[in-house]
Amino acid sequence: MTARPWLKIVAVLIGLFLTVPTMVVLPMSFSSAKTFRFPPEGWSLEWYERLFTSPEWTVAIQNSLQVGLITAVFATVLGTAAAIGVTRLGERARGLAVGFLLSPIIIPNILIALVIFSAFLRLGLTGSLFGIALAHTALALPFVVIAVTARLQGMDPALQKAGGSLGATPFSVFRKVTLPLAMPGVLSGAVLAFVTSFDEVVIALFLQSPTAITLPVQMFNSVTVQIDPTISAASSLMVLVVSVPILLGQVIGARRGRRGTPR
Amino acid sequence: MPAITTAAAPEAPPSPAPGGRRRAAGPLLLLPALVALTLFFVLPLLSILLDSFTDPEPGLGNYASLFTDGYTLRVLGRTLLVALVVTVAGVTLAYPYAYMMTLAGQTARAVMITVVLVPFWTSMLARNFAWMVLMQDGGVVQGLLGLVGLGEVTLLGTTTAVAISMTQVLLPFMVLPMFSVMQQIDRRLLLAGQSLGASRLATFRKVYFPLSLPGVAAGASLVFVLALGFYVTPALLGSPQSSLIAQVISVRTRELLDFGGAGAMGVFMLVVTLAVLAASRRLTGPGAAAGAAHAIAGRNDR
Image 1 (cartoon, rainbow over the protein chains, first blue to last red):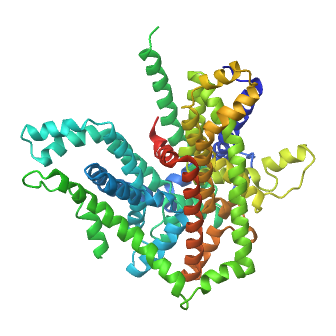
Image 2 (cartoon, rainbow over the protein chains, first blue to last red):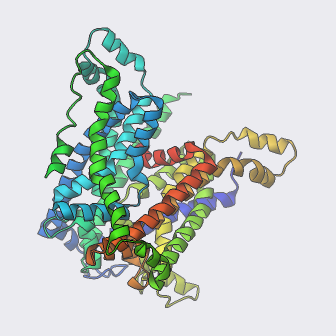
Image 3 (cartoon, helix red, strand yellow):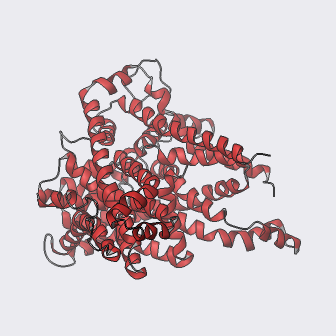
């Protein structure tokens, strides 16, 4: 069945609505003005220079990478172990455990920020990067569980039994059979956990201190507290960092798809 | 700091249980994650729940003031209204787009998926900042409105600006679950309907639309719930006069340290969230909720 022309036009317009507005950050980042005027009246590389040389921005980038990596390690280890553990539970217990593990997804971030802030205030963990990473771990855990579970579901349980029946200890079955097979899920879980943390604003905003500012918080402050156009350079880089791998993935996927179905 | 050791220590690979009791290893593997979630999520949540009934004084005072204090009431009403508008606008935009995705050829579909996935992955702050630039006074949007005779409309700082950007920012969350449901609809059913004499519109209305409803419900409930707790967009594009609930929670928590009052608002939000998700689950069956969760995690699918 072919689509009506008006439907195509509507789809194109919605596609433009999804992509075009964000693109203004690209020309903005080369502006020479100290304001957010658009279109820019002159051009410069000042904001990129500031992004990579001024301490407030470089430290924020380092902090975000650090928090993202700690979160990815914690969430991946905990989430992978949990996802494997879940498969060994009975039907009923499995439903309960999965529901509990996924619960942070449905709780609004602002509520998570509120409860973590009040708890960390009592524990003295506010204003520390490690505290932010711990909070992000709770947030990222569900994504690792989903990614690894999806991978494990497609796995033949006989493989693990075969390992055991051939005399391997449970640990070496885990290390030599389960883990390698689950690895793609584990890796995509780790990437998801890192991105979840790297892009998270609200919790990081609540837990921030002058020595614990992540990149999103610095960006947020650069429009709310002061007017710092460096945010447009930071935004442009983030748009590129995200778009390029997705575009490459689609191109490679399309190539492979074409090669896979020779006519 | 006892909390940290519990988070870091016990997630080492499962200790090789002598004798290979595989069943017993299950709970053991789960334990670290359950402990971490309990410590950093459940216990703090319970403590705030307690605060909302006891701080500053025991009773239902915090909840009563949610519905009696004029300011809070206005904020709640505004937040629900914005979430509703964003959801309806989102469904209206996402439905034809997702539908078109199912009809498109291989290349066109790859392009359409990319167009959804790129914003999905792009930093929330970058996208909201872009809207801020576009909507400022003397900005591009104002200029466009001027062309159709609507100059001098101030957008930045208004609820309209917040709703427009939230619709755009949340649109991918709407498209993905819809697409995953529509993709599974057997199009031969439509041909069957038409061959039995129904018009194109009637087959769509009586066959296709009901079959696509689980996707609509999943996307709409997800977007509504996310919109309810949105902080960044109203903070950047709104104004204190047009605060949404998340901003008020933030002020009460960070500036006033009023955990009881903020807690009551948070609990209210949570109750609405759970009710919406439960309703959507009833409407669509448990599969769609899982589908929505998958859509989020499936950020990495391609």
